[in-house]
Amino acid sequence: MGQILLVRHGQASFGSANYDQLSELGYEQARLLGQWYANSHQAFHKVVTGGMARHRQTADTCMAELPKPLLVETEWITDHDFAEFDHHEVLLRHCPEYADAVAFKALLASHVEPARALEHLFRAAMQRWMSGWHDSDYTETWPDFRRRCVRALERLDTDSSKQTTIVFTSGGVIATLMQHLLGLQDYQVMELNWTLANCAVTKLLQRPGQFTLNYLNNYAHLEWLGQHGTVTYR
Image (tube, rainbow, N blue to C red; front, side, top):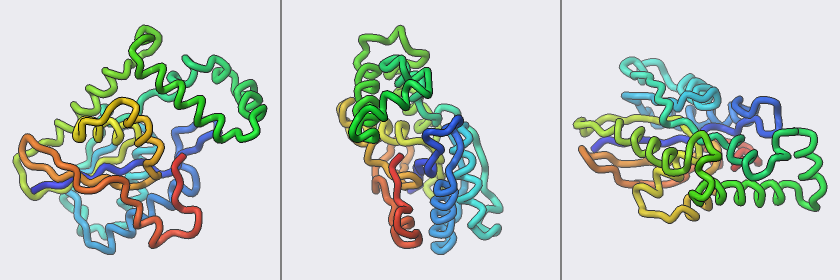
């Protein structure tokens, strides 16, 4: 039986000019994951990244912690179908103020709890995108995103019973794949996405033509090896 490890990237740089970069804590989370795998002598036959900078940075930092003998036969692949949906566009279509960073920050600052206000805005933006009523407004519709996530997973279907593949991707992709495997409703995808920790691991077992969830959102490596505050969700 093969296994596929889906890793949500480390904490990115939310609020900065370029979100698609790991924060200092994001790099530390990736190092802790690598140390966890090094301690368990885990080898990988294939490393897959979703094509975003934060995916590759997480992969590089994590894998750098493993002894070189464990990576001698490892194949590295970039698969853009494991890239996250465009959250900038999703937010912008719901909240035009998002186009102006100053105006958007002022909008959030006007609320008593800015973080909670942002969460409500993002939930509403996701609902608009997933509703299907405004598909012409988006470069990639929700059904299209869902199809490409499933397509990416299906490319990992193999006849080998012993391969271990690790995929560095994003929360939206992982939550969408859980919908595919578990038959979740759209609203449950959105709720699940909010609970996925940075650098958490979701493990799938794979037989030819079949994927089965083994565990979801495991971040024991961050709790065991990290300091207080190492577990993050945004």
